[in-house]
Image 1 (cartoon, each protein chain N blue to C red):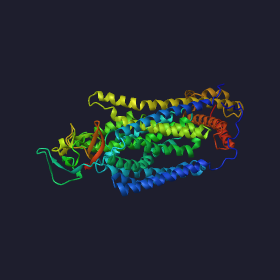
Image 2 (cartoon, rainbow over the protein chains, first blue to last red):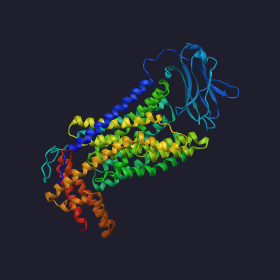
Image 3 (cartoon, each protein chain N blue to C red):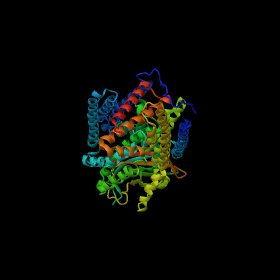
Image 4 (cartoon, each protein chain N blue to C red):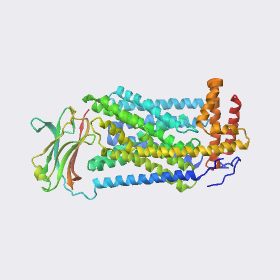
Length: 162
Length: 462
């Protein structure tokens, strides 16, 4: 006859505890990752000014019409940034993110002084596509430190309709 | 190791059983919190987010209420007399059916119809049904000795698909809304979103397994059962998430001419490659924690086991969502290999872990059942005969016995033997729990089970 050893339940329990220890390490690494990319105490109080988001004419490189918060898929659009209000030696960039978090438009990194004339940041249609994908697009002006964005100085979210 | 008297009927674990054990109170409290959270979530979504999912959530409340009521009546039906059981089961079935249909209707009309159309949503749902059904079939088969009732496996999957997804809408929407307006886009925001998905989704899915653990204790025997229920909840959640992603991606990419390709890829990633690797694995860990806790006597250990299950599930889910982007996929043909490698590397270790717990649990359960077969046979009650022990101990031998009966007396004989085997396994399981003093049922329940086995034996041809 086999002898039933209740220790085996303890083996299961201990195995679970070992897995849980690994889980705690994973979550701790995640927390470290979050703090690394979102370092605390980075608020400088500096604010960038986004003049607006406008329909964009690629041929002329100019914006058209009024400030808008939604666009059709077939419309090209761009954000206009006023760099003059920022300290001239700050390391900054500006980016467009599409609904999947991919960068679909960018200027910088550089200083506001160097970026001065590049006020229009357009969304570019990804390679292989005919138009912008629908969804929410986020435009951010970021301050960089050591090559990493550490603070959002201005943000706009617009909708590309289906 | 605890000494146990051999070859005797173990004493009643709880000589003065209460009709409603204390854990029922916890179950009622959890259910009340879930219902309040659902109502609050729906109202807040509607008032503050005013998004399409917000409206879905509000109108979907009726569906959720129907499903909750149907589940309650369905589960209660099995505690009623056989004569009135059918009536209650029909009521429960009608309510559940209405709830599911209404929910799908709400999703179609308010979320996807504008962009993809109800036809696309229906095709996506239909494409996911066979794979999810296959997943549930496999998961239920994993319990080699005492398979869980289909009704509970389906209730678990329905909770995962409908209630758990409803519970997380508000929390995830709010989290995402705040994070996308305050955090720097990039890996930090990805990590934040992954924490949101890991914590909220696993808590929502885990609530179903906790409720089964609290209310259906007779059908929640050990770590194996916990893994089965947990995986079933995960498969249900994965079903609804697959439909959502497939339809959404179809709508996004359709005007570019490859909507079906995008939806098909999602189907393969979630219903093929990720069927057992994703949500099923994560929630199975919650079930494993509850299953181990089911048999532990020390309250501190119980709490640690449950907490461990949740932690592993959250970590597994988090690691996939947060670090997916660290494994970029080439747009070349080699990308197809990379997709499989990514799943294997990132989720494979978690799935291997849950399989290890399952195999160990099955072995542990089998050893103890054999021990109880021997003790019951030695008692001379006649419910289990000494020569039946090798047959009952092996799923393969049990099948051979049923097939022999089929050859002799057809399907009728096959099912009679199946019922007898099932009754004998139930009896051994009951004895095992009683011996470990982890059962509420009075000793009379075990005697009734023994009488049922004897009656079944009488009906089975020799």
